[in-house]
Every structure is written in structure tokens, then in C-alpha cells.
Length: 135
Length: 135
DNA sequence: TTATAAATGTTATATTATTACATAGTGTTA
DNA sequence: TAACACTATGTAATAATATAACATTTATAA
Image 1 (cartoon, rainbow over the protein chains, first blue to last red):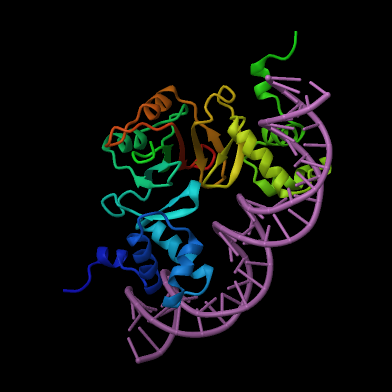
Image 2 (image 1 turned 135 degrees about the vertical axis):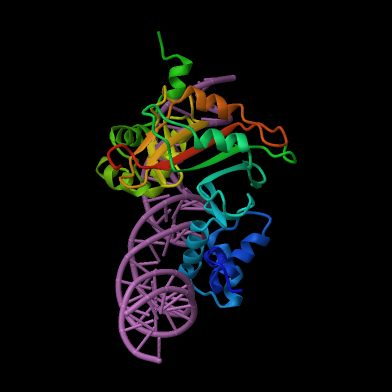
């Protein structure tokens, strides 16, 4: 039995795998040039190689970009299902970032309509505050 | 009768006023270097002068940063009340950005608690989709 | 008025991201 | 398998975004 289409869709190329592994192991969001520095020993030498892999990984939902921090975190929300509906909490002291998985929240936002009755195909929500440790 | 304390709090310095006026008149979010280019005739010559004014304007809620676009928009939500609770819709084709003012949404998010029962002091939400024109 | 905080001016530099072009691998299908 | 389309890679250069460091000036409040 071969590789199913759905598996293929999620199979990563060499550079994508290297960069995903690094992000996935990291306890904190990683910035592009931090990633670059850390994968140079694996042969990835140029920013563009990193950004291309990051773009793809974001596109397929394996990672998310924390927009307010220009940093990337692995998806921990039933892997890849929510690339288009992301929510995070960010501690303003220690910078700890956690992906929020709340059925209520995602339902509320997925169904949110603006004044014109318009629904949206995608959203990103970033909450800020102090984490347990920092309070 | 002098300037009241609350007015003072919202009074802008020269550079802040120049930059706020530009952003406020603009129908679309402006990027820092677009702003710089447009205020050079008014004597603001360096990026840092722009960024300092932007930081302050964001802090006092006169403008908001659209994080996913690195661009700035004037607050149109009962001026400055919601610096810490922002929501926008962004058209992925024409890049039109609109500040969302929905009592329901802001109430829901202000009261949102995560799994640990934690509430947050601040949030930013960006919705993506196609605006009326672009559909 | 004098101390304090806020804002400004200026140069240099750090950080984040893309353009442009050439090459190589992968999957599909005729 | 050959031809094609598509995805990914490699490399150099550069564009776009943002901050550090230091000197000076202006505004505010005690």
C-alpha cells in the first residue's frame, strides 16, 4: 500500500522537515533568523531558504506565525486543522506563547458576522496579559 | 478656563500631530516608511522620528497597528477607548481594512477565559476575507 | 525656577523579508 | 520513457521594517 493522497499532502520536503523539527522542538516561538542560525549546520545557508519553508509550513497549517512577534510556533491544535482560525495567549513579561484551543471561542469567531452581515474565511487572535508564573 | 487634564492627556506634540493627521486622512493603513516619505516636507527626516510618534499614538489609542500588514490606521471606534481591544477586517484582495465595532464581540473577548481561567488585559483580532467589492 | 519627564534631532546599525535568476527534483500522463 | 507541469532548492543582492545610542530641546509640574 502506497502513500495516500492525504499523507502526501502533508509530507514535507527536506528543508521544510528540518525547519519544522526545529520549531516543533522549541518551547518558544522562533524568529526566522534564529532558525537560520540554527539550521546552518544542516546546510541551509540563506534567509530565503528559511522563509520559503516557513511560508509553506504556515500554508499547510503545521506552524503559525505570531504576527505581533514576527515569530513562528508549531501547531498544537489537532495538527493543521486550524490554520485559518488561530488564537494565542502571549505573556507580556516572559513572552510565553500558548495556542488557545477553545471550542466556544472558535465557534463564536467562525460564526461572527460584521455589521454588513459579512462572514470571514480566516482570523487570527492574539491575547496579551501575564501568565501564571509572571503574576 | 485652562486645558483640562483629560484634554492634556490627548494633546499631541508637533510630530505626533503631523503623523496622526496623515494617518487619519488616509483611506488605507499606512506603513512607516510611506509616512516618512510623506512628512519629509514637514521636516521629519528620520525613521526614528516616525516610529517614536507611532509608538506614542498607539499607546494612547489614537491609532492602531495592523500587525499582519505592518501598517497603521486611525482609531475610529469612539476614539481611543479601545486601544487594548482591537478587531479588524481585512480584504485579502484589495487590502481594505476596517475597524470592527461590535459590542457583542468586544464583550465576548473581554470576558473570555482560557482553560486555566485566565483573563487577558488586551487583545488584537484580525479577520480575513473578501470585502463587498471584491466578491 | 528648577527639576523632571517627554519629545526631538541625528547617525548608524540591526532585524525582517523579498526580488531575480538559475538549477534540480517529483509527480503525472501521453 | 519522454514531455510537461509543478514544487522545491541554491545563491547573490537588495528592499523594507525597526531599534540603539547619544546629544539637545521643550513642556510640565513641584
